Image 1 (cartoon, rainbow, N blue to C red):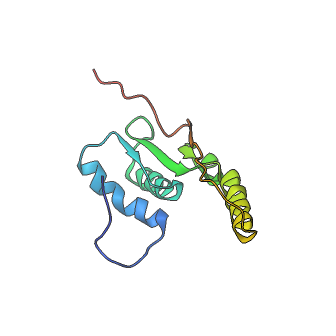
Image 2 (cartoon, one colour):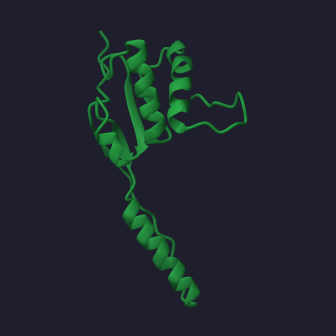
Length: 124
């Protein structure tokens, strides 16, 4: 696990992924799970700059399921959230609260979309 707390200034998620990748590589990791797809895309860009082959040398997985994850090369394996369903449900809950109705918590299940940025680790 790597957390960038070197400074308190907010940089873009893509920049975070690019800056954190070397630190993770020195730890000898074979796979990285990023807290969102934009950080994973930043890590992917850093890998391309360093000549690291994805997924042969390193697997990358993001989280969110944003549309852009389909269009990078290789396409990004990601954990998708049902964002539209979450948004609809949140809006309905807000309307129900405003109308004085009782609401119930809902749990939404994310799902894995396997794409070209991850591979099964084969050790000899």
